[in-house]
Image (cartoon, rainbow, N blue to C red; front, side, top):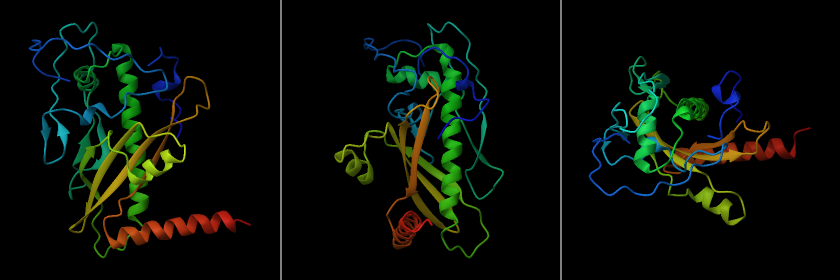
Length: 241
């Protein structure tokens, strides 16, 4: 999945949590910054100790870090992803300042001038993920006219999905992150699993990602939908002519 034209990552870039400003603990050594086409393993927005259990969102403030040298935007972008039956209620993405605070809390030495680009990538991937979820939702029979909405989500970067674990045993690269999204509609909630992979770059310095999105095999309906989709893909592969 290439990042679209106009995204800040197409511009030449340098190779790319909040709490009390008083350091109450001995400062831990920071991890090295990843290479340009990488992002830290695990979405930093899902690894806070303070988490709202209703939506699994961390409690992040807009507080500037004591040693921060530039001012980061605190404005939050409204996503296209509904968070309730009310289609007007949308999830909000973290501001660059919140994103930076989360990375700092995790111990990542992150260039401040790259944060806005990282937030753009984060938001872009989530928008693409939601569009894939909607494609899956169309495969389910639903008698009501209610639109699906993302009721909860959770980052689980350290837990490989069975599919990712099996592929890694066969020599495939492991995903750098995993999310579980809970999509609700008509009184039912389905869990979707998303594995995030880095893909080979088409243009040097422009990161490319692959998202493997599918319903979790938690119920008969999801098993049947997954089976039919896999059978359809094989049929098209064998009889494409």
